Figure 1 (cartoon, rainbow, N blue to C red):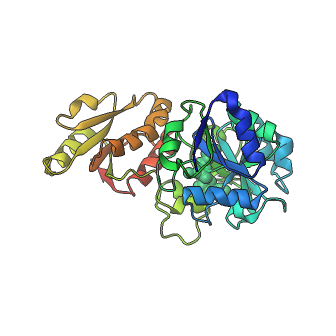
Figure 2: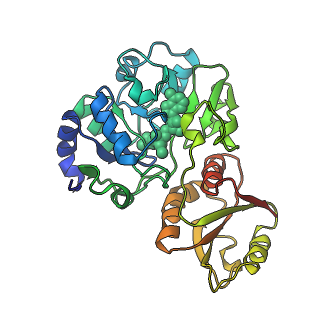
Figure 3: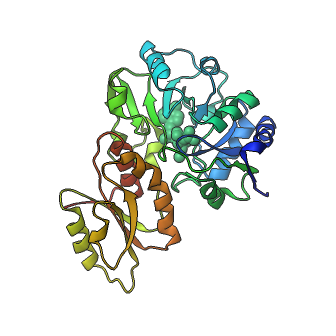
Length: 340
Ligand code: TXA
Ligand code: MG
């Protein structure tokens, strides 16, 4: 299959593909999604096939209006409605009880469904013109970093999907926050663009264990996606946390044979000059976590392009956007964390 790259002016080609039961990659404000008609089982199957995604990992449904959301769910906690009012359109996916029209293939067999209204003009126009709820996971091959540019989608899915709608770089760079609103207090399953601090201004939120801990051996995690290894470059990734990160990394580098091992560092702007003889990739300033989030997946993909064997990553705060970034970095590192 030849994969077409569509410009914004060619959006109607993507609309027709969706209406005809095909899947299409499109930009959202977080990362690129791989969308298909959420109500068409055959169309949704194509998403799982193209990504190589395990069937028990449920998809987020993207809507353009609350009216569209109400068709897909049976009940909504009043505080979830407040969150919708405040954070939609935006990077917040709410897990709600699903209605009968949502096929189980979308929800990985669960009785709940994750839904959001994305804050991106192309995504919203695509959903409106197709008049369909669009199921869309991130448009990467399962296990790879999520795509924040059309070229990332192309690198993973060329010849596996008919089209990619190109909307340039996505703004947030990490995926939406996933919040389970079928339990109270609401449970944060995946930290993302909307921070827990922001959510707690409106409702009670507990953190699921998967926010900090490996769920690989958890038979029944609340968020099935959390048990899979994610965001991983081919290189070995080691996350270094604590008060003396650069000196600890330099010490660890000394233990490596640099003639046989290509070593890199993902460093913040403040400390990037403290490493010599290594490939240094700059994440951005510690004072601008949004910038670091926006760069993160592109940098993890660059690690592969540069064919690095081993990468040390400077740890960041777990507060605000740092919670989402550190969650992704721990996973990218396969939970290999060194404390300095
Ligand atoms: O920003 C985003 O959320 C992007 C863009 C494209 O919207 N999408 C995205 O989808 O990241 P995906 O499929 O890569 O991640 C969806 C996450 C997974 O961790 C999945 O397990 C969880 O949401 N999820 C989906 N439905 C769920 C449900 N019913 N209950 C619990 N977790 C659910
Ligand atoms: Mg994903």
